[in-house]
Length: 574
Ligand code: SF4
Image (tube, rainbow, N blue to C red; front, top):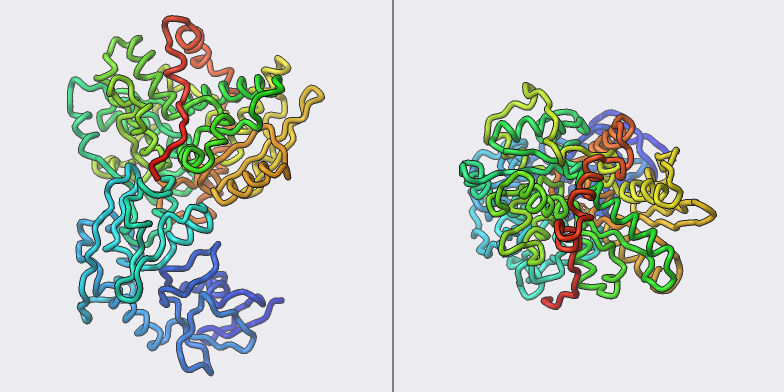
């Protein structure tokens, strides 16, 4: 039911059952908050969203109070603004004073509020937090001194990701966020997805960066520096530069990286074309055998792999026997490309530009090294790429787009689709159709896989067979599906898993502050690329075909197993 309420002496429409905050936001009235999350129950932890409601003595937190017909509300009265300002001043009283050195300088919600509320002096002086920074994890840095106890990361890790790796510890003044027994994130049940970073309003959670190492490589004349760009990064980088969300900057990123000293720029979609080919082949084989483990699970999300290894080792034989696209392409670069170009593998420095923090963890797994040389030398997130471009003073608007380099710059649009949850399944089914019928799938767009949220189910009918596909994203949804599979409530032939809700378009390394609208724009852009690109099937990528012919299928040349096959193992370090 819709009714009118009075806000700041004007009438606005409100819906029965919604909170005051929701009604205000829908009507374009912004009130600040540091703890609110649109898809989660309110906690009222920060109290910044308080408003004055006529007839009530105290100020009311708008995020947790349902709106009612009789309400007359003031959102920015002097009393309200004074209260908000005091709250921010109290938060700053024991917050470190190193804004100029903080990673989130210029993109910090606390800093923005201090400016908005005109905080210009230190009225309160509290004891600064004295907590140790957690820097041992390969993907995520945790700085409890900068934590303002908004609880967003706790709710994300618990309710969306389903891991509860971080939680409140201690009480009263000593309360902080921590891990079990205060261990490093790498020693608890964190799966490195970085979704906590995406919701942190300050610099308390960040990705682990090593910018010096890349600069050294770029300025070492003996080092051949090679980049690969994930399909998602090209449609999300724009937001870091104030360009319209979803704009495809693929060609401009190629130009930019060359300007900064990269020797070659490749496309991760090439690696994805190999991954899609391998999964389709493996699915075909498993469908034809009675006794093998089914369903087949995707294996390209390293956070999912970490979860399976840590908590569901029985799933390991069900995982597709192929490394992630990042690792496949970098392995190929350090073997085939090294051989063809006459450059020693140890002189090649591979940089993966990813939407993902878990890829940093994946890159340092011991099986991703050959003779002490990592297949992936460096992983940059979309955010880190933006910083790198800004550091080099490059104006994206005046950079003409260029093509990626031969031979791994060629891609099919199938290799772009896995950026979105459901896209890998769509791409695999295109290839599977060709394997089973010898023909291209005419209706290559599989619409049911392009809609829906955390779980999509689709039956692919082919040659009197029905292939049951399930796509799950967000670890909480994955856990529910695993339970259902165990008790036989559902049956599946292929399961695509992405830990980040919606897939890598919403990865933990993407621009902070993304909205639903931004995510939709990124997805739309990927589907438009699929419409426009001339090669739509992974098996039609001519360079992938050539790579199999000249290397991967050649006995004694390509060490196919080492290059393509992962080593999944039960881990016991928790
Ligand atoms: Fe990384 Fe994508 Fe997995 Fe998220 S869903 S952890 S971005 S691979």
